[in-house]
Length: 207
Image (cartoon, rainbow, N blue to C red; front, side, top):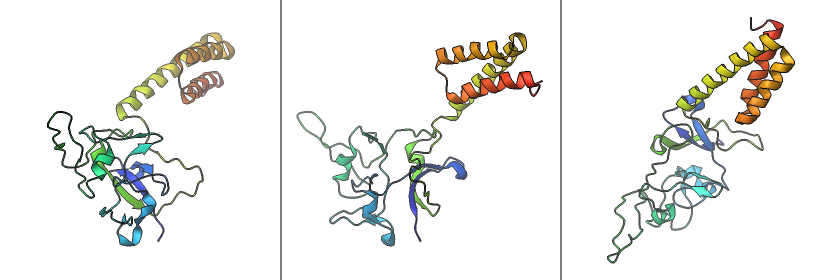
């Protein structure tokens, strides 16, 4: 059965746990080889000659950026060890050039879903998106506390817009609030909700 490789958060609700949909020819494993090099029939172990990777583990990457280990060294310094747990092979600066003591790749990076790298897993889903331009990164992009703060501000702007509309009418209230939204550089979603507040005040919906 055909599957799609995904990177999901074990701490998010199941319905919204997928943070990234992996593309076979674009995304890579910690071993340094593409997703497509990992064979489904062999438990998604790497098929590249000489690679001892037993199971695909997504290496977090986006455009030119990629996550580093908490030891501060690049994933290639870990991939050079040849297999899990991907100990670091980097030599530390200094006259003695001692080896980095890091025993395996472990990132301290926090995903946009608000949870740590270590709380995520590479897994497979039979629900394959057929959309040509389906988003790769699908995490909501805001931590819960940030989303709550944004919601509070939108509610405050809505109340302000409704009050102004009741005082000076639709046109003046819309002009005033649109100018304020432009100065503040708020999202299109916030702007739309402010306009709706003006309209609902005048047509009686909000009363």
